[in-house]
Image 1 (spheres, rainbow, N blue to C red):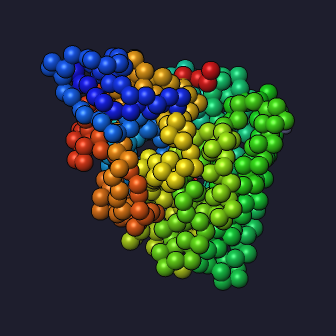
Image 2: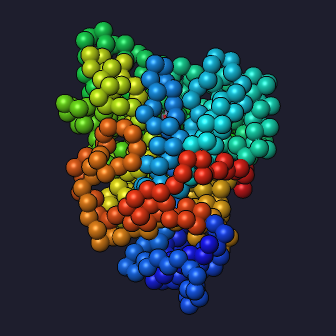
Image 3: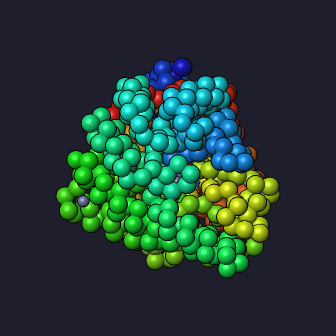
Length: 456
Ligand code: URP
Ligand code: ZN
Ligand code: ZN
Ligand code: ZN
């Protein structure tokens, strides 16, 4: 089937220009003018921005965390994603049974996702311990299109420095990317235990127990470890602090290569005052929300290129049931918040429409850079002949108020309830097909696994 998107402003990471897009066989066939519209489905995009479908490289759509399970599965999570303009995701696997192989979790996720996903997806292998077999699996999986791995410096399967070094050295040999959750586990446990002992168990103490020092220390340590491992490719997930950002800048200015950094909308829009609200448990996530100064520093970091990617860390737990587990003790609240559908429009409104980032920077941060870093470019993340026809169309003249009832996931709250949003996503095209135009129309299992390459 042939589709033509006419009269829009095409926006990529480098360019904005008026042209039409011709789509055939799930891909962009050509960009130009005067395409023959006979037999074509035509979308009029006059006065609209035509952008690559957004790429979300940090999701926990389907996560078992202790007794809790995220509210989404791969159908509802990717439905929410695509209605919010996101046409590909890379999921961070949950921890599996103790001592399980990497492949054990990957097989489980692939089966599940293949049955349910409505958009293309990739997987990050999550490393929960390190031995010779795991290192061998990294090699095999990289060859099979899983060219990135996630490690944690906190939680139950935190790796020690010796293990991190082994993973980083293997990644350097493979040119695979290691995504790291950077928080100093010892500092956090010390403060958590102290606050609980003192009876300080309200959500605000979640933020105090995970101080900016714990993020900055972990970022600094892991960057030094990556440096020792011959500048292994390292990607800092969900950066939330000015201190952590300063450490990244310092390492780069020392000449260290292959450092990438990600932040998420919640760290750019919400601050730690949210924990003092009656519904403060909604905001319990790790790392926690920070101070206004951190928010200002992160926006600067996006604008000046110090931060490469905006992803979501989408990890939805029901407010009315699961998040309430923290009502008498913040340490019992499952960590994580939803955001897969909100990201693209919130960042458009808060970033582009408030002149904090340019339109091209917006596309770079949400589409192009994440696709490049994780080996999916130019299939994903841009608008070029030959790229997948994954496209988001935004009308900058429409305003809306964020409201959970208008979202398409399963979770019962949004962090941004009531926020005035400038701009609206009016069409989302996935593999050359309109799957959202105010209504969602896609079937479970119509997305595919993305075989990703290694970093160039
Ligand atoms: O609180 C969060 N972010 N939960 C999801 C897991 C993680 O740390 O990324
Ligand atoms: Zn994390
Ligand atoms: Zn160093
Ligand atoms: Zn995460």
